[in-house]
Image (cartoon, rainbow, N blue to C red; front, side):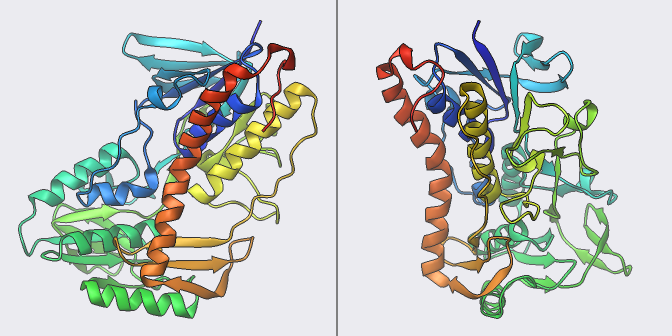
Length: 393
């Protein structure tokens, strides 16, 4: 019988893991099923663009993986039974189950409200395609002079607030950050960031904790109110709750605890990648939730699975960082160079050059999925069955 590999989630990590597994393993011996609720591959790093009114290129998963041997199952994951090695799903035909021999858990993350009252009722987010589309519609309803508040101080917050301010210069746009604006960046990057915010007319509320979100704005921990017709909550991410409801060893954040090959430390037939995993890079420091971490973790997990199934040498964990790319609208950006353990260096790219680099990075993230899938779809039919489980890279 074929070895059943099930990949949960078709974001950057899940789609890359499935495509790479198809390259590494022979279809005569393995069957790969990719489970995802949305029929399209979503470029999450561009959702702030979608929310600001730009259209993204649609990529149907069935088209993307056509001819690769990967079976796409459009369904929502409701539970995982790691003892029975089965996944409970709901699709158009109702509830069902998918059995696995090896599971790749890549369900990613959603917005985290941190228990702040009113976030669920009154705030928008850009953590998913549907929520980004809802924000897009709401922003489209705002008349000139309307007020928008983005809450959060990280990369997602900065990209969202600058994209909105650039696309709608007729609005009053503000950012509320718990710390200082870009306070983790180098001096050069921080200076450019402040100049950009001034150019776009963005009001910044630094060192501001939001205690409550209301329909007409946000209330700070100090009791003052920041008025806003639209509040966008971008203050961090929380992982999908499915893993925490299983017997898998998870962290306090609900992330699956994995070893240096992205393999669960409690259940060796389960691998976790991307935001869903509590993993370390080559330096031993924890990986942050990001596409920059997710794609290499997907490669590592796929290579480790293939190595264990074929008796080959396990890959080394070489995951490290080179830079943080922050778009500031369509023609401006900051590329902060960092050490492999994600600490900022003094050097940074800014302006149009940085924007071009950022665009290359975004395109590369999507290209990594499409290139692996389409290239392998052309090659796989020429691989002789005698090669058994493994193929060349």
